[in-house]
Amino acid sequence: MIKRSAIIKASELVIDHWSSVSGQEIRRPFRGSNLPLVLLRKLADALYCCAVRGAILSGHKDVNMATTQPDLPKADPPARGSVFTWTATVLACAYILWSGTMLYLATPKFIDMFSSMGVDLPLPTRLVIAFYRFAYPVLFGGAAALVIAKQFLVREKWVSLSITLAAVVMVNIIRGVTVWALYQPLFDMMEKLSK
Image (cartoon, rainbow, N blue to C red):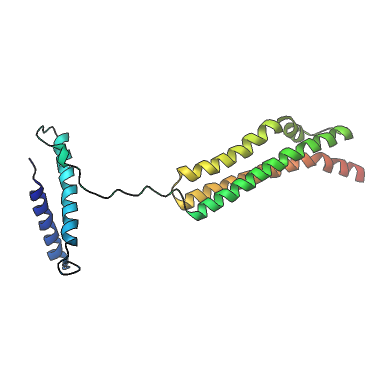
């Protein structure tokens, strides 16, 4: 069975060898301090756990797992994003939802105007009018949901900001095409009247 004292001795030998090779000496920061000894014991506990788990995996039956859990500090969970990415996410969601809501509220006004004018509508305008009740919530709500979900799933700051920017650009393109489709019959009618 592997002994902790053997691991401690091996750790001391590794540290002594590193000190002699690197020319840097590991000393105690204050006289009488046990800080390096505490760190050495933590390293020994970690090495002991690895050795015992390796022995268990290789099939040794006489290993006691009760002594394999050292007093190591728990790692902090990864951050869910910086303040900058959260600010960008909130602003992007507000813009996306505002754009979708304003288009959703304005499209019925265009429908009423076109029906009272009796103009022949081009295909893009007919598609927008036919599918706006379904398409606007899916497109704009989906973009907002994507921006919020990426905040919890993507850890890297610049990747997160890139996804946010891409979502805002796509919403701008969709909004621009929709506004163009809604105003196209008015532009066509103004062109006919000016001739």
